[in-house]
Length: 330
Image (cartoon, rainbow, N blue to C red; front, side):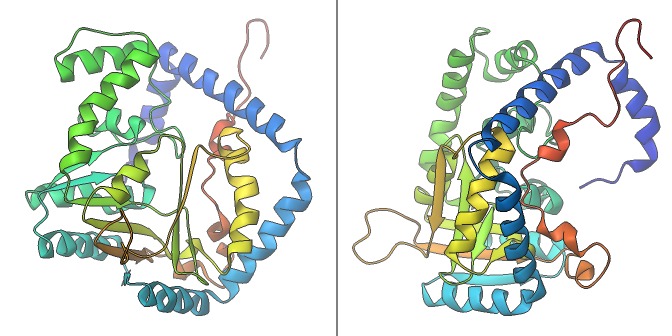
């Protein structure tokens, strides 16, 4: 990812003066915050959060043990597990996999770690086409590879009219403004890529040590197409995402969708354990998991270790850091 902190004050001033952007973000701060609050009433939120905190701490305190357990169990099930100390090394490993399998086209699900790796750029330099299939990430990609603005809703800063203009310009079709029509158009654009890709690249919301599984949580179903259709599947995630057991995963899943989108459960929840086996009707022929350090082990044992407990729900991004200024009020 590009470091642009030196431009923060100037860019922040510009964005604060952008009325259209402020209106779009106001919708976010009301919709997501209220949905999350309502969803949490269905569970004992403090107790569930405390339970997950304890389980995540247990994993981090013995991170090396659980990573070794995951590697052993995943390998036993036919997965190739690779470790990358840096994001550059991780991108190189994925590039090596693509080269080894003579990959020409990659389809991707939303992944913050591959943003760290600048994976699309690396694959492009190899002559490999990389297509984002999450709707938000796809919109950003066709908009000159604009970086995402939110973990859960990467294109939340754009409204329907802006996206309608972008689709008409990029797809060369009549401009549509109904959301159902626009999503169908995106589906029609992406379907040929799903059918012809050689390799699928996904993130991993969690990996489970006891079963060697990769867990994916989405609302669009594109993760299924990216993991079932291509002959090669590569999951890329941070080393801190390991959970010891499926019971730990169950606790995490009581909180993740509720905190992320206000849903009791996500539309699609996949636990992927190994490549296609004998008698299986679908699944990849080859499966790889790339576990990325990228500075994470440097937090272990320090003041910032608790940062590694983050489950990437994005709830912290749904609250404005300053009070809204309203007419007649300071």
